[in-house]
Length: 257
Image (cartoon, rainbow, N blue to C red; front, top):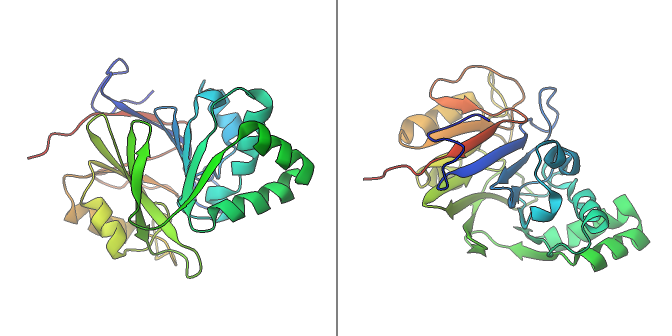
């Protein structure tokens, strides 16, 4: 357990567990997946069914999934997660899943390819997931989490979201995959903590952020605390914390003027 402003006993802390910190083709980490308070999963690219178990986070305690976009390293493990949950915890409450336009159809198509029609139909009949396509700017409550989808620029053909999430007096941001666009600038300026992609440390990365652009965001938003993820390589970044697979942080409320 790594601590960030608090102790493990702090009831007002927001727990962030890094399941996957690597970029799509990274040799240094699983694909993107992050768990908030054991209940809300941000993206599902990593082998979540195994990694949650390794960290003593039972699948039946997971309640919500928010998908930033439909690229494989953020989305493709979701059918496996739903199927494992249906088999192992058939009495669990249905997962509520939100994502950009195409999530409902994409998940069904992917599930049928990955699991076969008969088993996928069984898994969804037992698990009864509630899947919703959202649009940029849409917000709502996922239990005690207040979440807003912030549209960012990443793919020319897919809608991509970052997320602004509030719980326990903490405003947490997740960049998803993005370029240095108005959406990520607005998100970085409006949160206490930003889990921010930094795909490259050494040179520009097409359709992604790289270190120089992240440095600019950090300088522009000195009160926002940056946790860098979606890493293709590792290097010290002054003023930021680098994510790594298995890292657990307890985020405390930040005093604001």
